[in-house]
Amino acid sequence: MSNPKWPGPPGLIPVTSGHADDANIINRNYLDRIMVEMRVIDANLPDLHTKIFGNMYDSPIMMPAFSHLNKAGITGRTPMEEYAKAATDLHLLNWVGMESNEEYEKIVKYAPGSIRIIKPFADHARILSEIQFAKNHGAIAVGIDIDHIVGNDGNFDIVDAIPLGPITQEDLNTYVNAASIPFIAKGVLSVQDACKAANAGCAGIVISHHHGRIPYGIPPLALLPDIKKALQDKDVKIFVDCGMNSGYDAYKALALGADAVSVGRGILSPLLKDSSQGVINKIQRMNEELKQLMMYTGIANTSSFDASVIHFL
Image (cartoon, rainbow, N blue to C red; front, side, top):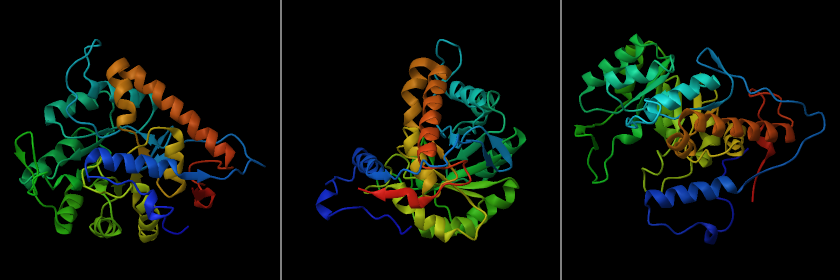
């Protein structure tokens, strides 16, 4: 299908200040205006099993790359450990965001074979060191938050008093070669960056605006079809996050070309309230919703999504 620009007349586009909250409202509105036609004749029970980087998972819905949720709860485990445990219990792919090597090691004991996402540190030796540490602790892939280069003051970002810096296509290629396991560019929000990441040898990208980090950031699903087309001849996994709060949201992303989706804030409240069980309950419901919409549209498995079922209100 053609690239889904914002549907409808210009007056329907919300007026915003460019703040993160507004970007997320725009994203939610965009998701909710994606409609699906019904194709139920010959439909059957769908299969959610999904292969990612050679590993089979029970669903294309993945855990997010959360960071810094390190205050132990009533179980004695931190929220980082709790959602990693939920990923293992659900047999889903787990992601881990910015954590020290010590904390990362604790988290992945609950989810061996996680993906580690590293910040774009100004000290590139630190990036290479964290890549190696993740490899040594069984990561199936590693990656970098390219969208965390820019700070709110128009300079390079600083996180936890650690300076971040620029990332070039050559840098990405260096990390790809150092990793020798799949490398991911997280925070892609243009065809240009998607192609640069692919040309640098990245095995995957995450289409995302990191919950509204970029002012006036376009909804990720608005760019997904064009990015999918641009990478059609590349062996690059396309992941999506931002606003994935239901199985219906996940369906729309998968129908438009994503290989899998991450759920972030959708699991945050259940995680903080009910630990791993809250996450399990949320994801199980999302899987039910995803299967429901797959049945309604005649999609048999996660390899047979069809963008032609998608329409814009």
